[in-house]
Each structure stands twice: as C-alpha cells, then as structure tokens.
Length: 298
Image (cartoon, rainbow, N blue to C red; front, side):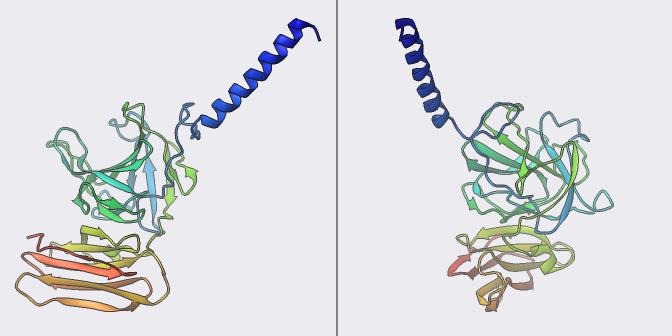
C-alpha cells in the first residue's frame, strides 16, 4: 500500500474512534430546538388521574417560550380551587408568593439534571421549600394570584425549564410520553399515583391547604372549606391500590379530641371532617409510613 494511502487510512481510523468516544460520552438528546440536552424526567399532566384539561400557549402576552395555561370547565371560574399535582418527582425549590413578577403563588420543583417545573397563580400552597415530592403528590390548588393590579382569570400557568437562560431555556413538556400539541390541545391526565382527587373525596367547597409525603407510599392531604370553617383530611395510597391495607387519617382541632379514620382500605382513608376555627393537628399513615403535624394553620 502506498505511504500516502496508509496515512489517510490511519487518519480515518483515528477519526472513527474519536467519533465513537464522543458519541458515547454525549448526553441523551431530547431534541429541544436542535439542542442536545439530558433526558427529561418522566412527566404526567399536573392534575388528578382521568381529568381532561385544555392547554394553551397562544392566549397570553406573557408567554415568551413554551409556557402553557391550563383550564377546564365552561366558565372562567369553573376550575378555581382545583387540585394541582407534581408532574414529576423532585425537591421543592420555591413555594411562596412572588412579589417581583406576575407568578403570584408559585411552586418550583427541581427534578435534577438541570430540569425544573413551574406552577404559578396557585390559590394555596401545599408544600414547603426543601421537601421532596413524589409524582402525583398534591402541591396546591389552582387560582388567580398575581402581582398587585394584574387581574387575571383562574388558570394554572405551567412551565418546564432546562438550565438557566430564560426564556430560551423553556422546553416543550412531554406528558405520558407525548409532547404537548402546541399551540393548544386537550390532554387527559395519566397522573395516577392515586386514583382520587382529595377535593372530590371531601366534597363541595373544600380546597387543598397542605400535604405531606408518606415515603413514597402515599400522600396525606389537609383541605379547608371557608364557607363552613371545616377542615378535612384524606390519606391517599400510592402503592397496593385496590388491596385492603392498613391506612389512617386524623384531625384534631385545638382544644378538642382527635377524630381518626383507621382501617384496611384499598385506596384512601377518610374523609375526616371537623369544624376547626383555630389551629389543628392532622396526619395519617399507610404502608408503614406516617405523618404527624404540629399545631398549625391557626
């Protein structure tokens, strides 16, 4: 073989080896606007199992990327107070009213790998900074909170971001393996860690007020009915659903005795409802994990 040909052959082999190493070292691509990024967390719609919601990216001047506004129902306030869930597991990075922007009550979840999700305009917050939440855990209730003077109708403003260069870091969310159909689409939730919405279990007028993770086994949820000054507690099972296993929920208004619902249940314990005009203690258990609150929500 001529010397020149041998040189070109050697260089080609080296190039192939280098390309193979680079390919192996490259992160999995999600194909976001042509930029290779780490694979996104497995997300579901941020609403209870079986609910159908309309998502819209084109009806707000505030949208500068792939943000989505979610609504359901036939009137502007039909979904006010509806339950909002974590779209994927992660750590709560923000859970507070944002006075410097139009997000109002905001929950931000850090999913790792530079991915975060945002849930804005909530009427109530059911998680605290630093808590770890499971996919399907209750994180708040849908509302219309925003900056003072910015009057908006109730909706959930939802974002997924990769990295920190906003707004170029907003990415198209993938729910149940399917990319959201921009600019507008109806999506049915497969966020079925629990098959029940705690607001439906407690009944009309109850809105999510707080929640606690039960080590991946379930979620105990505290709700409030402003019209009746009643609290309600439900413990939702995430595992062994449909099988009767030990599950409990309790509520103890300040200065009163504790009311507990405890037994072998397939899906949830409760609802436990009590008049509670002042502080309450609340909690529950399932799958060997339990939560017991301090006296709070005074």
